[in-house]
Length: 201
Length: 341
Image 1 (cartoon, rainbow over the protein chains, first blue to last red):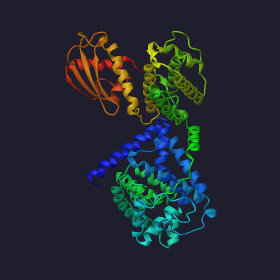
Image 2: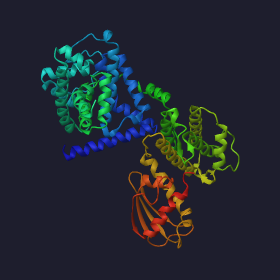
Image 3: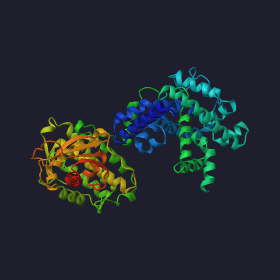
Image 4: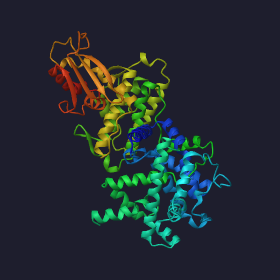
């Protein structure tokens, strides 16, 4: 990691810790800041996974309430606030989808997000299709099909790696290693995206 | 499962974990492993960050949801009560302590948390007792009724007596409700600089609120330690007035602990966010002459803990220049100011 990037990530970690602490001290303006920073991220993940506007709103609300109620659950030493909030959103969305699997799943297109979502998107208006998001799409498309399909089945379709294995007709060990290889390649690509963008989208 | 087996299993599962694509049992296995394995923790962190971007281009959440969300948040956990700036550190400490208390287990409340005899429950009552003297000084009705000239010790004993047998939730809610009432009363104070309240001695209202913030923080750390939680220092902008209060009280107590001559001063550099520099005369009534006898640099959070009598003056890391003996006597006297009664 370059010295400049290291410095930036240290500054970002301090900002995250400061926002977390303001939440601990009951600062309502910190809650508003949190919402302004992450509501699109949280809603996007919830909407992509649940494909249901109402469910996405519920997940979004529960994520922000959970952070407000337990801000100390976030440990800045373990990663960014953004990554943590995204994780909470994804977990809740996946839990919801798994509970309502039969009702909710109508499409099985695992490459959903690799396509432009601006037109006819069932869950909302696209805010940005430029810059980081576009380069993410490029990074995803640059992945071999067998890797991107495994990753998107898991993340966007809410499948477990066992279900991914069945879906793709491969052994479970192969499914796990495809998830790992695909996500690792994306992590490398995204690191360079964030290095160009500063804090990212 | 041995550590090595666990490690190789977890390595294979980390990506699935980052994508929420493993079973609950596997998720627990991964998370238990991450605490003790820096290599896996680093990879987990990187993969989590990457997963956060998989939602792709942002969608706009429906507008106008923030107001309802704020109301729901306040219903789940009351925010710090709105107060004038001088009382913001107090309102913040109250909110943070309430968060800590609401997360305690029933078994945590009887734990001894301070002075070898006060339980977590006793400390919350003690805080309510001290707050009550400030509230009564502002003309609020407090329960049990405040007695004119009541000392902090007597007030604490009276509130302990009145609240004996109460469930801990009621003790916490009573403390919080009184703190909020105090905060609300401050909003109506037209000229807080002219008001004095009695906390064993007459104290300007503004300083009284800073002292209440200070004590709430220090006892909050006592409670956190008793319950095995990590302490959280105040925000820098809240820490600064507490350090300033301590630096202003010191000249009133130092002369009893530092041998004469008292026409000297010590330069105090409090380092870290919220710190600053103060010239502290050894006696309030005697102006310090010339250059400071000693210069002491110490971390501002550690200094405040020392002022709260929560650190050993001989063990706090400090940097001293000038007269080392005076500096040592000065540091030894800091806990005696009893900023936290």
